[in-house]
Structures are given as C-alpha cells and as structure tokens.
Length: 150
Ligand code: 5CA
Image (cartoon, rainbow, N blue to C red; front, side, top):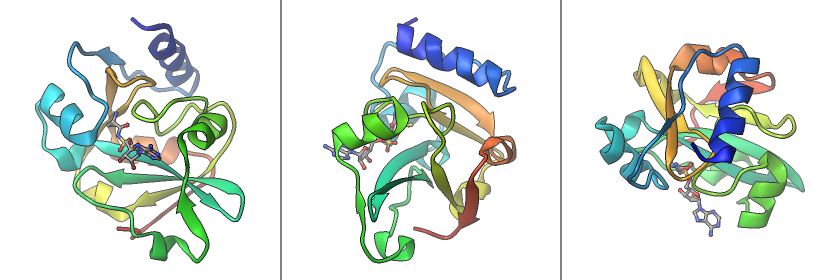
C-alpha cells in the first residue's frame, strides 16, 4: 500500500476505528470515480472539502451527490487552494480523509450524509478509500457540527 495510505490507516487505528483502508487499481480521485470503483451510489461517497473562513481552515463533509452551498457557510468563506488543503490537513486534493489530519480542524457535516448507514471516504490518496458507519464517523470528529450546508 502507498505509504500515505498506510500512515492514514495507522491514524484510523489510533482513533479507534477498525475500518480497513482499501487501495484500488482504479482512481478514486473524484466521488464518481470512487463510487464506480467501490460499486456504491455516488451519494454514499463522502467529499472532504476544505474551505477558508476568514483565514481559518474549515472542513466540510458532504455526500457525493450534493454540492456545498458556500452561502450556508457564511460570508467570506471560499474553497481552499491545493496548497492550503495540504497545509490544513496534511493530505492532497483527491485523497483528503474526513478524520486523521495533521492538526485539528473545525468540521461541518452536511445532514444529507445521514441518509446512509455506511459511507465511503478517501483514505489519504486518490486510490485509497475506506467504509465507515456514518454515526461512528461523526462521533469521532472532535470539533464538529451537523447541519444542512448543501
Ligand atoms: N477521493 C475522492 C472521493 S472520497 C475525493 O477526495 N473527493 S473530494 O470531493 O473530497 O475531493 C475532490 C474535490 O476537491 C473536488 O470536488 C473539488 O471541490 C476539490 N478540488 C479539485 N481540484 C481543486 C483545485 N484545483 N483547487 C481547489 N479544490 C479542488
């Protein structure tokens, strides 16, 4: 397994998840690609999107079939650039996981994710994903709010 995915797998264990990171031959860079690779509907793929709110990073977890409405995040919020994503999370766009970042990050979960008992998330690289129970994922995020942001 790619060392970034292995590092993330170790972090998942440290966080108390027994979820298994799966590395796939096909790209899982986008939600649609991940859905196709895993064989689930695209809504079940978690998009982990970084925004910048007046200089502070903000992570939004959104179902793969929804788009985050930045107006619901507040005035002055914009999507992060690639280098900002890596700085805030330690991971590159296409592989950003929902937990296990280099440092704590305020996280907003779109309520639409709760449609699914199990969701699939990026596992550190654009070829790695892992399944997790939605409520277990939410419960493991230290600084989290769940509301409608799509
Ligand atoms: N591995 C997949 C499924 S879990 C994944 O990471 N999907 S994602 O939605 O969380 O990450 C891709 C997202 O990164 C895109 O939806 C887009 O919002 C964002 N993105 C892609 N390219 C750029 C870019 N150049 N600058 C800023 N954001 C980007």
